[in-house]
Structures are given as structure tokens and as C-alpha cells.
Image 1 (spheres, rainbow, N blue to C red):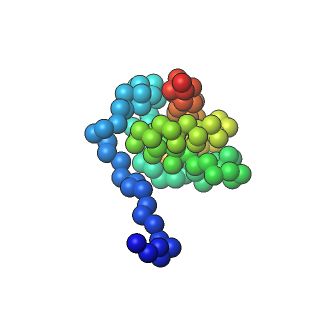
Image 2: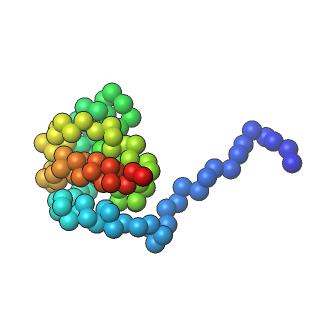
Length: 111
């Protein structure tokens, strides 16, 4: 078979029926305001860590909701817990507490 410089990409589809979301459910009980998040991106616009690295609080929350724990662990470690995201959230989501709880979840998931 000839190589033309193209390759098949790994399937990026997430099967939510196969993922254990019990850990995220425990975070959702602690940070009840997370249910109000609409993913507007205001948190990402003011993020201090996002200005100097590839961190994005909005992406982190999406990874948590999808149950991508390995990628989530790398992302959450970049958060500086400065709290700017909470100040600008139009839905009054306690994003600082959410990131703190996700960091605690990351620590508990480590082998």
C-alpha cells in the first residue's frame, strides 16, 4: 500500500455510556452552582494561567463533564486558583471552588 502523507486519525468520539461519571457527580454535589454553567467562555477570557499557558477553564469543565480524567488531570494542574473566573461569571458559578474540587479529584485518582 502506498503512503501519500496522510494517516487515519484516532476517533475522538466519546461514548458517555461507557464512562464512570460517579467522581464528577460527587463534585457536582459539592459545587451545586456548576449546573448553571452555560459555557459562555467569560472565565477563559480573564484567566491568568490561560494568558501564559494553554490552560482554559472552559475546556477543563468540558473535559470533566465528558469524564476524560487523564486529560483533566493535566489541565487542572495548570490552574492557579486566582478566582478571577468567579468574578466575571454571569451565572454566578463558583468556578474557583469547582477547580479546587477538581484538583482534589485529580489527587484521588492518581495511582
